[in-house]
Each structure stands twice: as structure tokens, then as C-alpha cells.
Image (cartoon, rainbow, N blue to C red; front, side):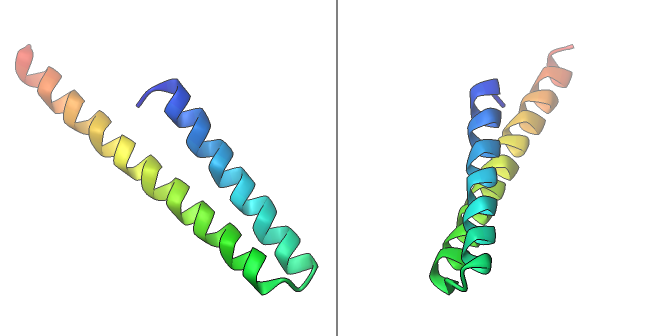
Length: 64
């Protein structure tokens, strides 16, 4: 996983958390749900990148 991807995904996750908390504090259920969705999307991207990294590690192990 590239550093830019890691930073971008973490930033997206953090922004989602802020949206969720602001939505909760202001009783804005739509904003709260949007924040949770943003966090879920960021977590899915992070999981996908981890799978790519693991596949690369396996490929490298067979090269040795």
C-alpha cells in the first residue's frame, strides 16, 4: 500500500468520524449516517490495500 493511499484513507476515515460526531451532536441523523458510511468506505479501501500488500508479500516469497 502506498503511503499516499494510507494517508488518504486515514484522512477519509477521520473526516467521516467528524461528520458522525457533528451529526450526533446536532441531532442530524443524515449527517451522522453519512459520516458512518464515509468511515466504512475508508475501512473497505484499507482492507483492499492490505490484501494487495499480502499478495505482494506472497509473490515476493516465491521469488526467493
